[in-house]
Amino acid sequence: PAVFSADRPGFDVIIGNPPYRNGVEGRTRFDARCRAYFRRKYVAARGAIDASILFQELGLRLLADGGWTALLVPNKFLAAPFGQAFRHLALEQAELRVLADYAQAKVFPGVATYPVAYVLQKTATPRAEYDLYTERHARRDRAIVCSESRVVRMRPEQWETWTPAFSRNAGLLEQLERRGACIAEHFRVTASATAGEAYLLRPFLKDGRPRGRAYRFVTTGIIDRYGDRLGRVPLRYLKASYRHPYLPADCHALTANRRRQYAAEKLIVAGLARRLKATWDDGATAGAVSTVQVWHYSPRKAASLMYLLALLNSRLLTWVFRQHFAALSLAGGYMRIGLRQISALPLPCLDLAGRRGQAAHDQLERLAVRMIGLHARLVAAATPRARASLPGRIDATDREIDRRVYALYGLTAKQVQLVEQETATPTATGQPAVGA
Image (cartoon, rainbow, N blue to C red; front, side, top):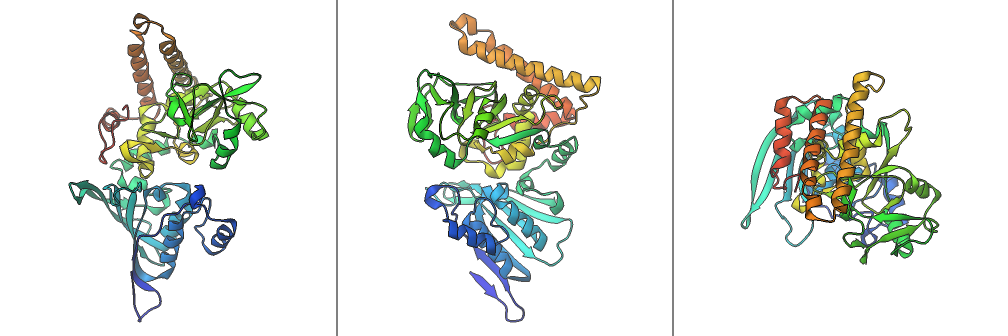
């Protein structure tokens, strides 16, 4: 519905629930002519096109100056790349006044959607700073109730995503981001495979012992922190099951660029997990859709991959990820983890030319190597006696890594306590513990 005023051009109020139709899945993908038309007509039609974005931009266009639009949209819009252009446009032409999270309220029973509602007020001169009212909603019995409400200070220039509106710890987030650059400034981050590549690779995927040169094949579900479960649990990929999957190196579906990536030393990050999970690969593994690859721009001039591996697997980086990208969360506390999100995570400022900086780097690097070795020994242990001491040693090493990571980012004892509490207990949205 919309309300139109005869006194001035444009609508005073627009309220709606736009259709959610994305540009990635085959069954909902727009054809080439539609995509070309949308890109000509809509500023926000960039990357994968979700239909809700087009309706959101149209709603903003149709508003009169001072008018209000309130829309119910998918929560991934708050942080996902497909929503970036509209988020930027909206904050140039309007003020974000209300943001309400309904992801845990099961607004549409039987439908796997995680909605949020927002209210924008159009204005020719948005203020540099203003109050934003936020709410979280949950379902209790048959009713949807507001479980939390707050007023936060909105600073549009600092908001690449809208998810931090729900964070109680904006000050700490700003502190961490001021400590250094983001991961993408020091490491190359890519998707292991696109959705289109997934179907191209499927006919070439083999099971068993490879003949000739081949890449181990992993998916998100078998990636662990500092290791994987390939060969120990079945791997599911496009409705097929494999025990020892591999991809022949001469696979015709692989581009030269993909071969270089799979053959390079790298980190592989799970694309769906309750906490960040990264493992190291020496150049023998191919990753499937939803996994992320990280490797060096210039190995001799940058921090090592092992150092980054320790950071990614730390509690602090998972906490930061949740603060920024909670809108990408699914039921059960699972997070959607993509290359854009990994790229944006902050790295601590570290002077590798100085003795102290190099020492801090090397200590974390050694601890990451130790963790890989301990996990490998746990997998290989043949008897309960051989396994007995390993979980305790792994936990102790994990705690040491977390302690050093907190120090690198300059956290106070009170801030460490906050991060530990929020990653060890269910979150405000009912998500389980990070370690679950």
